[in-house]
Image (tube, rainbow over all chains, first blue to last red; front, side, top):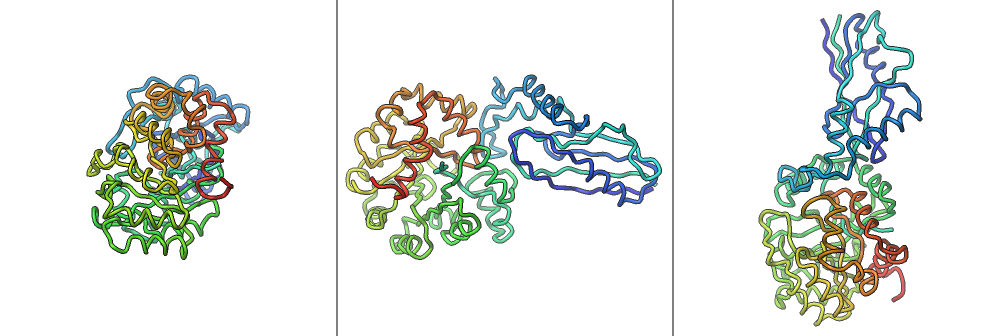
Length: 143
Length: 283
């Protein structure tokens, strides 16, 4: 049994955006040497997410617009207050809620050294409060 | 367009070069977020539609035993991006303060002075401690950004930032341009009165003390003071500042733009008044 964990940084460039990280996931799986197992992808931040959807720019916009409608940045949130753990105000509850709605992780099986996923499925890092340098994890478990 | 009030506290490259900056950020300036690459700072400016940022240090050697960025470190950052405008800071408790300011401007190329009375523990109208510095700044032709109003730093007393303590400075140094930061909140009207009375007094918008940037700026700039005072009376004496990284630049810029001010007034706030303070335009 092998367990491999890789932490990757991604520099987001906009307030909200989806960044296709499928090539990075495939590379880590390939380099792990695991033939049969699973790959988990998760973000390390509560104002970002991991999303799986079809790789089309129109869908990327629809996903972000829908999440904004469900959890708008400008809302009547208790989080709009000073947080002494940060030394600054919160006021990004909308980003945290989007992260909950969109999810913070994804998982796929690995078979014969290949990720088992649909031909249209792409893995995205979802930024809800950028631009920021973010970290996400890819963990491979298998043999 | 310019953000006239930023603190480069969380720049990762600088933490790597100067490890003590981590402690200074967390325990003295009291900002607890993780560091970010310099590129994030520049992307923040992009996201807000701004080109440049004024970088502000605070020399708190006597009061806190450290510099919240030295003048040399600010100059180093300015060499890393032409989008940065570096200001100096000096410790008012040091006899050499005025000479250090001259060195920072003439030799390091810094273009203004930042003083924070609550952090540095001095009253701005203290003639013995502070006036030699003001005389030097006036002679050098540089502006001073003063922290005014409440500070989030736990050891920084609000009393030092009351706007009325700046009246003698404005009165005694009529050629010295001074910026009262953070709208001197909560004393917004008191700060407005100083700016109305003294043409060398400016205010910056870097104020956020509760709610979110949009709601707070509306409260401070459209309820505590009428929004018309910025449009009609102080349009040449108010500059945009974010107080990044306590607030993201994009959020403060959006808040100020949401006030309903005219395009002409916003252009003054975001660009022309700052350029005037920096001596980039006549008058």
